[in-house]
Amino acid sequence: KKSEAWSALFSEPMSELVKRYTASVFFDQRLWQADITGSLAHADMLAAQKIIGADDLAAIQKGMAQIRAEIEGGQFEWQLDLEDVHLNIEARLTQLVGDAGKRLHTGRSRNDQVATDVRLWLRGEIDLITGLLSDLQKALLSVAEQNVDTILPGFTHLQVAQPVSFAHHLLAYVEMFARDAERMADVRKRVNRLPLGSAALAGTTYPLDRERVAKTLGMVDEQGQACICQNSLDAVSDRDFAIEFSAAASLVMVHVSRLSEELILWMSQNFGFIKIADRFTTGSSIMPQKKNPDVPELARGKTGRVVGHLMGLITLMKGQPLAYNKDNQEDKEPLFDTVDTLKDTLRIFSEMVGGQVNPATGKLEGGITVNAPAMEQAALKGYATATDLADYLVKKGLPFRDAHETVAHAVKAAVSHSCDLSELPLTVLLQFNKSIEKDVYEVLSLRGSLNARNTVGGTAPAQVRQQIARHRARLAS
Ligand code: ARG
Image (tube, rainbow, N blue to C red; front, side, top):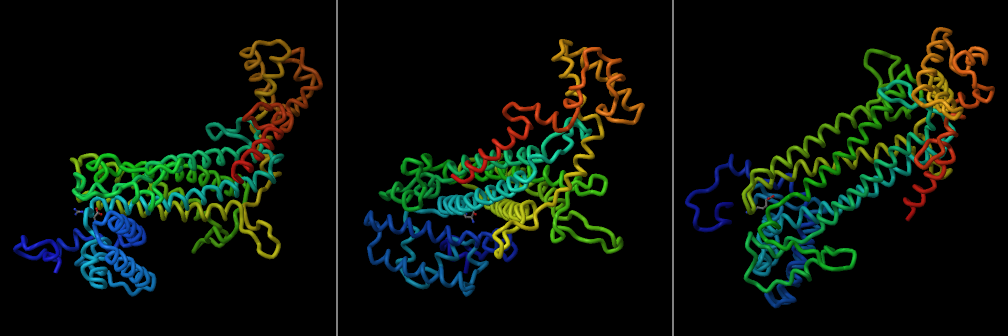
């Protein structure tokens, strides 16, 4: 029946293989709500502009309500023959309400229809993702709040560098996810623009009120002004908004992946810094002792998949002449999978990091368990306060480069004694520089080192507390 849907022009029906190859209904049906919403806004405007009658509008609304119920109830019969979500819904509408259904497509093309649907759908998903990003930030904050004074060896090159507050380390991820949320908000502005009214590519001969449709669909800026795509050729053909979203999503996953890598390291026996709840781990079929960090490992793996989708989408766009081409139908599966992967990953990470609220106590339970003594013990290895000794000597008047060299000798001595710098007796330290006094031991302590880094963005507990408060306030507003 499909070939007849076009016109009498076709002399033979479409082959079964081509039908299957070109159809998108089995994946684009998830746009059904956006499709109905968009159609209703279009119909409302057509009636207001007297392009269709008030009775037609009423019939369309009634038919769409039934279709909505059928889809929600799982009774709607999606047909491959009808190619995509748009034609399936329109055909059913016409079946239900007759000519009014046939009038719906006046002044519209599937080209501006699909671009509108994808934008409406993605806008809703961006809002969900933004909420999930806040949840994850809050989960990280809840662990940070408990660990301002927990000392972690900070690494560069994965070699012990300087001690940091564990909370400070977690707040680094809060910063990343906060920027991700900013990026999502920025992408949303460009997603939230109306293609409808562009028709196939050149605009339409009907006196459409695009502003009305935009406002009905909530495609407005902060001042409430309608956001309308201003060039019909561009509106139906570009998918840069989807590419931008994928780029923002890829960065979220890259951040999750870095966190995953750290969680995996921290929970390995060789670190033993944290535990994650058993429900996020799996055992081994051969080694009875194992608890493997499958969730963070999979998240790290799924990052590749999301970044791959970004490559797919951007490559999809690059060779397309204006205006619409069927290539664009290939935007959906990568976009859908990106959204699904991102949402699941964020949900699972919020719970794995922060735990779940126990309804009985109202308290968060089952988040990561921190082994503060193990972290601190690890920070004591590796001469993490060597820079502090150099800074101490600078304050005594030594040029920094000389202080650096002096401390290198002190570290060498400590290595040969198999002890920490703070365990070298004053008599030994004095051999390296005569101005060293007893107060050096405070400087060489992990807590002294932390407290000394008391500038904005530094790891001193006082700074970290301020940052936590700032993030809490930001996330509450
Ligand atoms: N399913 C199509 C897509 O996703 C809808 C637009 C089809 N337009 C067309 N002229 N064939 O892009």
